[in-house]
Length: 416
Image (cartoon, rainbow, N blue to C red):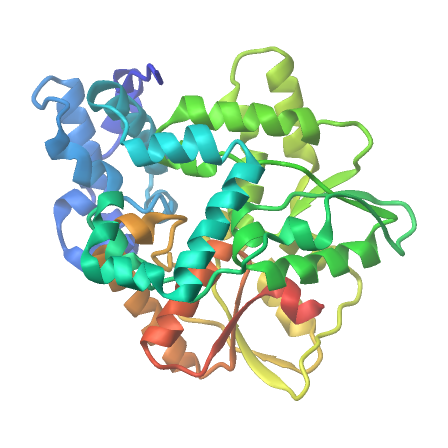
């Protein structure tokens, strides 16, 4: 049980003065125009629950779970109300009152904590996807058992690799050509299973920078469970990782998933009470770096772009707002030879992927994605670069859907 009581946050929720500035930046509100899809509407709902004017029931699931958790509302809020955090806490209490869905119990309790099980499940998905079985299941309506929108979302991932990245690069120590830095490479689930070109490029980069690189045997960082409101599952995943990441023989922990990087940095929030877990979480938070930070700190970088290309950049929500990495990508791209960098309009707007959001809220996610694709068309760029595998997956789908010739890639792939 999560045992979260949203009433403890009544004062924070009450700071909302309904000014409406959150409407300007909210991708969901800009897509639907519904008050329940913007921060002030969601906060009004939470206030009504606390004041007893509204009961916990399945009817309030949509406004609670339709939120992208992108954080754009807080960035445009004068009192800086942490709406995303409050929504997560409300989701936790909702799960206590209404219950978890079986698909999430399977994912959070039995797959994500155990990489080998996750790999087996991924291989089964790859088999179904690559042989057309999944398309047949979609045609027969069988995928609806996973959720209302899952059948439509099946088309988002074009093809699954048949083996995880870990099987190709092997976990454990790799020697590097750097002088002293001992690097731990945290392999996120998205890179491990889908965006493997990004992982290969990152590992080549890390081996050039570090004296040694250890491909860590971590499990999921816990962000999917946390975002869903399953705080107990998130802490369980975090504890499994802390036993590996808190080791004293690593100088830095690097990941090429901005979502993982952001959540690892926020591990101390999972363990607010003083104790061993809190100390380990603080140590991990201090040593974690997004690959964008590491590349930005390099004195010289060279692009593998030949011939010259025009490049634009999409800022993942967990990079720009989650970690404050807003200026670094542009600096990197402007330093690269063979690259013409063209800033993307609304570059820090969510792409609609939001982890697994597109699989559960397909229609809403597509409205958000279409806006992003229209901005991409205006840029005229050859490459759309980002630093999050979930964004890569969703943006790649948008490019195919809109018939664009733009290639989507991870920033690591542009460097190495």
